[in-house]
Image 1 (cartoon, rainbow, N blue to C red):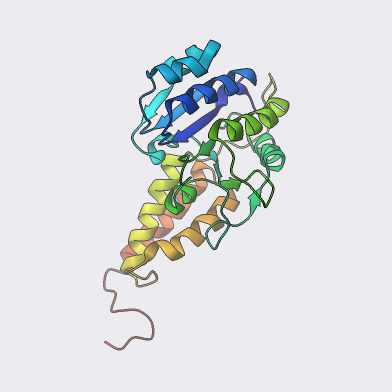
Image 2: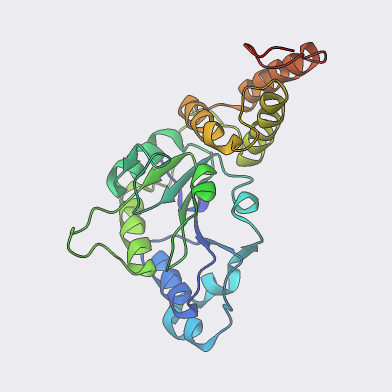
Length: 247
């Protein structure tokens, strides 16, 4: 189950003030109130005010962040919206499917839908920060949607999934900040023991992120993994080189 007070819409570096205003209107149409902006264009611009119409309160109350990681720090359940498929963009859900997943895992956990730049979307690194990925199926002939249109479609599906009550039997999951700290420690230690390629550690780390994302870890489980990594770090203090390499 999802509650409107625990889900945020996050726009990463929106370029058009008018689009930000229209997103506010779309959110308010569907009962959502939490807007987060990452390094946005000017949101006090006349175009933003014009297109927000009666959703000016959402525009005024938008929270500004310097990076997507900062915007997701308190959010265990996050969805990167994307049109592109590829090696690092797998298991992509449609809006209705992803809302179903959010409903089953939400409880008191914060959730977020993340939308990228109008001209280039989200980077591969930004997609990796999110637990899931979702896309809106469109015509092969012309699949590009305006940012506010895309937000409205997801908000419509969320509107059908929001409830006033909160299930008490849903696990409280680890925050984005906790997970990023774990991934940072993991990358450092796996580089140290020669498991990651120092020229491109992100390649394998993205796969590890997907594996751990499917586990839907809570804070205790994150602490266990971090403890294990600390022990590996200690045990590898006299590391002689990668397996198979001659000293």
